[in-house]
Amino acid sequence: MRHGSVLVAIAAAIFASEVTAKNVPSALKAFYNKARSGGDCTGADALQTGFYNTEWSGGHATYCTKYLPTGKGFYLKGPGSDLANMDIDCDGEQSGDDGRCKSSTDTQGQTRWGLKHLEKHGVRDLNANIHPYVVLGNEGSYSPTFDPRTAGVEPLSIVAVVCGDELVYGVWGDTNGDDNEHPMVGEASLALATACYGSSISGNSGHDEADVLYIAFAGKETVPARAKWDADSYEAFEESITAQGDKLVAQLFGDKSTATGGSDPQHTASSGNGNSDSDNGDNNDDNSKHNPKSGGALRSTIPRVCHIILVASVALFGLA
Image (cartoon, rainbow, N blue to C red; front, side, top):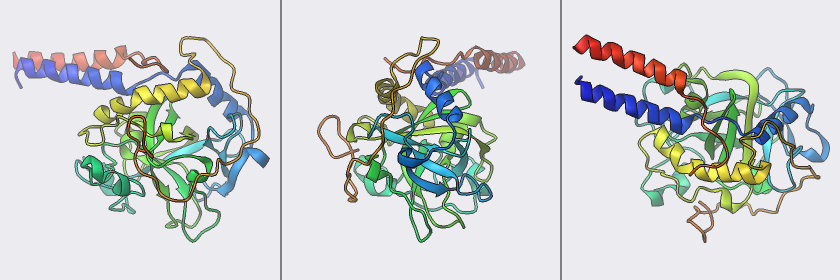
């Protein structure tokens, strides 16, 4: 590799780290802590109960609205201080696989929403290696089931994911089927899980701790208007939805990314907003059926940059 090529690689790596790594805004972090310390989600706060984080965890996970304003969305909440874990979904378009999805034993050739809605954008389906999608909703022959659309959450809408003190944006791209003994929650694409936890993630090795916060936003305006669905990398796609994700977080929790703390919105009893069961289309900028950053400051990239420079320096001196 020539010296110039090494420098280009350094710049690309630094750019990628800046795009994908975001601090959690303080008000959202306060909500995260409050959700974990608030105990079980029950009564009017629970849209539907009886789900499993793992096959052996017991059916105590809930689609929850506790501490959220009425009709603004939901999050996944386990018992006690648990939220949800992150299993790996490799469904959809299989091109660009780096080999990590090959260990998955239940990969499907299509996702619930990508195949239906993305053809107009020249994309065959969502790609787990590129698109950071989240699996929400449960459908099939088991019980209970849950359709996020009954809570106003649109297919391919933005989902905020707090994982390991970072904020990553995904889209609602797939649903949980009945291929397990129990109705499961807590699953995301390989691309999203890698952004959260690194390249050790694979098709059969996710993040087992129930400390991940998935927030699904309600409303047609939550479907990304300028998503780069035909992106050839996770970084390019994530950049295309980040500004809109930041805006949704700021609207729901308040833009307090530079503050040291913040109060959460007051919660009132939640109810569905009467969304129809029909599948809706994509969102175009202002009038459609569907589908400089504000909310979170970028995490410090100094350690990562130093590592990149060190590796590049070794390569440069080796070539000298």
